Image (tube, rainbow, N blue to C red):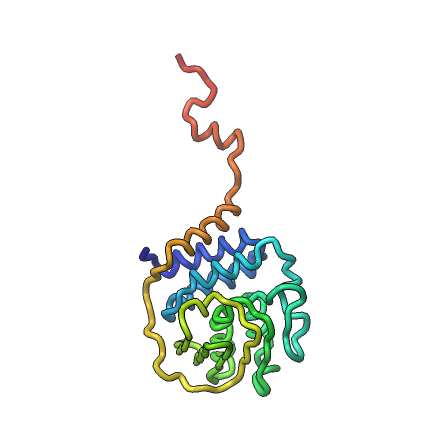
Length: 214
């Protein structure tokens, strides 16, 4: 598959809405998957795993309980979209001492939000978790992984801190080449947002409808 970044963003937004996120959060999801793909990271697979994790859950249970202290999950792993927006919104409060996040689904999904914080405060930001390390200056990203599966696996502990070296940044991408199976997952969630056919809409698209023109 070879898609424009805008196509990926629109699909990501609609899929997140189909998975139960508000339209505002769905827009954040779309922008996040766009940023990841543009940075050379398989954002489609990451978002697909996040939406599967969140599907059917109470969104309040997936969000950090409070902005202060360590963040931890209530009953299930924290959602990186909800945690990411909280990190971006509260960057000036945690930047000096960093932030520890326990039980986070697909941690690399917070990277676009850390990029926003990095741009706002004019510093690099680093996130480290099991067998992975990501650094961003707000525009580019460097990512070290044990293997590609780390992109979609949850982490028991993610440590976010200011600073870091942007060694060997990923090459920027201008098209997305998503995994076909992950793209199918997004399409399935997006399908939930489409209005079901009504009798009126079916008749409008059926030519003569029920009228006998003979």
